[in-house]
Every structure is written in structure tokens, then in C-alpha cells.
View 1 (cartoon, rainbow, N blue to C red):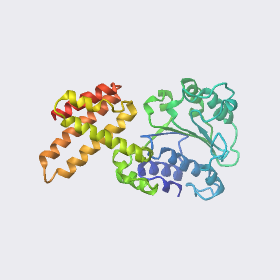
View 2: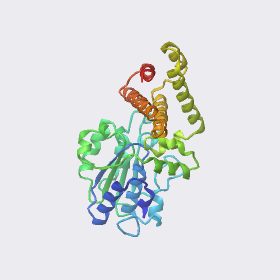
View 3: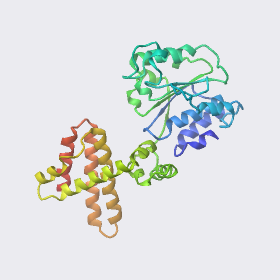
View 4: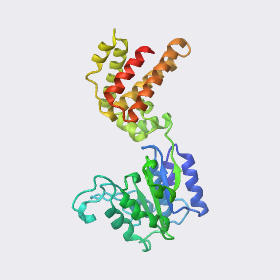
Length: 325
């Protein structure tokens, strides 16, 4: 079945297939969870099930309708070929199509909602059994756009369904959250991420630092990025071993301090300490305990960074703590 392509998200798949088979499909879902764990892939499988020509509760994946759901138009905007599947995303449609003078930059604007979604409300499907609207990164809806959607999400009509996909559900307005049914997606297990990397011909080492995200793992598996992360880890280890703190900080002066980049490097460093601890747990328990303390310190630095800490200060404080560990 079409949901077989969704790996590592059995609770979400079970909830959706149970609803489809029972005929009790909610008309507005909220697929929430980390980025890169299969939310959008599941949304398309759900759409295939609602639009499948063969009429079964679960999409066959082989009929013309199922194929067009997952086939994008070759020319911009690259949206599904099936006329009854609507895709909403920031910057997806050109200004001329939306009747605006500027492209969408700040978020999903009200004109996209008006022209792509609200223009279809009240009309029957062109071909399928339903009209399905998938909103990618729904937390990027502007306040105006979200307000414009409210009534339609609350009363979409008998054959119109919504799937809001988000990795930041807390940024959605409460009014939207209260009108959508949450389907939660968990981070993928490391072995699942590793298998995805292997199928894509990428080194599997990135799975350990991808935080359960297949898309992040594929990005991190780039050889240049892997070399940069190892270089950062080596620099921190040299700083920890330096004769004094001033010398340690001198070793880190040239490190990249962009927030997102530093977070990736810290995640890799934390995994380095975790691997050290696992390897030493039997033969060198003292070294294993040290590695565990170092791992906690690095994760503390990641939390500080996530709370909008200054990258340079976070890095300096982490090195000072590692030297005392």
C-alpha cells in the first residue's frame, strides 16, 4: 500500500489507515514532529488514499490518480499534477499568479490562501472523490492567512480535507490548533536514518548526529561538511587539552560561529563523546564516566544556544566547563 513508503512512523500510519478503513476521516489534520521524518511523505500517501481511482480505503499507488498525486509539474510552480490536490507553501507561487507585486518572503500570505484554497471552496472535485489541501510548513502562515482559513478548516464541506504539516506546531495560532487533529511523528531511529543514507549512497556516519531526521542526515553526509565537523571536534579537544584557558580560546578563534552551523558541530561533538563513553564502558569505566560528563556539558551548550545564547559566549563557556570536567 502507499503507506509502505513511510518508514519508522508506525503509530501515525496506524492512526491514519484506521481512520481511512473505518470511513471516519477527520477533515483537518495537523502532522507535527521534527523536520525530515516523513510528515510530507505521509501527507501524500493520505492524499493518494482519498483520491485513488480504484475506490479502496487505502491508495493503490498504481492508478493514474495515485501517480499524479506524487508527480509534480515540470514547470514552475512545481505542484502535484492531480487537479484535486492543492499544495500551499511559502514562495511556491509566482507573484503574477497571486496578483501581487512581490514574492512571498515573510510567510504564506493571504493571497495564496484566497486564490488557491478559498477559490475551490464550494466546488466539487474535478476528478477524484475529494479535494485535499496540503499546507507545507503551516507554521509559516501569516496571521491574515490563518484567519482566512479558519472558517474553511472548521466547515470545509463534505469532500474537502486539510493536512497541515509543521515541525513547529507551537507557532501555529491556537485557533488553528484547536480546529485540527494532531498526528504526531517521532524522530527516526538511528538505524532507520542509516538505512536511508545507505539507499542514497551516502556514508551512514551522519545518522548518529542527525537527531532522527533523514533530510538533515542527507545534508550532513556531504563530505565537505563531515570534514568540517571533524575539524571542529578536533579543535575543541585540543582546546580542552591546552595548557591554559587563554591558549584554549586562541585555538577556537577561527571557528565558525553562525548559530545553525555551530549547533550542527556541537551535535557532532556530543556524539563523539557518546561514542567514546560506549567504547570505554567495560575496560575503562573512569574514562566512560568522563565522556558522559563531557556529553552532558555539550548538550547544555546546545540548549543555551537554542535559548538564543551568543554563539561565541556559548562556545567559550562550554570549553571552560569541559576543561573542568
